[in-house]
Amino acid sequence: MRRQDTIVLRDLTKVFSLGLLGRKKIIAVDRVNLEIRSGEILNILGESGSGKSTIAKMVLRLLRPTKGEILFNNTNIWRMTKWKDIKEYYRRVQGVFQDPYSSFNPRRRVLDVLYDTLYNYFPEYREDKVSAKKYIAEALESVGLNINDIEGKYSHQLSGGQLQRASIARALLPKPSFIVADEPVSMVDASTRIDILNIFIDLKEEYGVSPIIIGHDYSLAYYASDRIVVLYKGQIVEEGPPEVLEDPAHPYTRLLKESVPLIDRKWSKKLEYSIGDIEVSRRGKGCIFADRCPFKKPICEQKEPPVINLGKSKVKCWLYASK
Image (cartoon, rainbow, N blue to C red; front, side, top):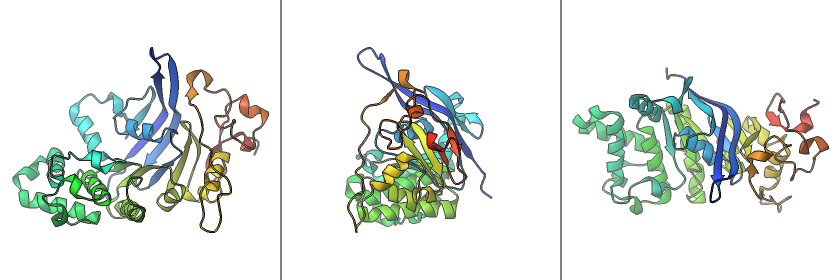
């Protein structure tokens, strides 16, 4: 039986300093609390600038949090000091990025990069080339690629869809528990997007890998997820199973749903993207969505809303505070 791993985000916060002297402080991720469990597909959904990719970078140890912590099996990943512990974390938590072409060195053959990844985590394969090739071939086959189709080729000789599949195969080689996929389908053809998402579904069901998918597409999030987290200006405003997208509770999630175009009708409402960031001095002074909310009440501009458990979902909104 595959071991059960967990990633816990506890009051995770990232503040960026802007300006010539760095005096302006902007909150990209604001006190996010989230438990990510093995055996599920988690989709973090939100518009551009909501903090999704910043969370992904912090989970992948590419960006250090300003405050809060990320716990992997109860160990703070930013307090790991021994390289063997850090390497073991990277083995269990792999990343797949938005642009597959930037993920591969254009001066090296794609297959050579895969071999290097395998040898890095399992050096014993250096002495057994036949087994190494079989191992890589199986990983490629699991994402719909044949090793003969990429052998001897560089990244520019593959399509975006093929290269993204190769990226996922490379992430599979260390036998991870989690794959953090940051906008994995945004730069591939529309016809390929469902195929890529189906790969993530298969990886969970057949290999026990838990994808954490970062995205902004409402319909794709509904298609491939067991749980959905909706972010707005760095805060989680709604969390629950994919069914919450059919009947969302938070006004922002409703706005996202209404902005999705359908074949038989025009937009019922055009999504207006938020303008400006949240400065540290404004934290906690009202709801972050108050300036765009059609259901705004006086308290929404005065006090930060609590997180309300509605049973099917959790929502951060004053509309449900008395229920």
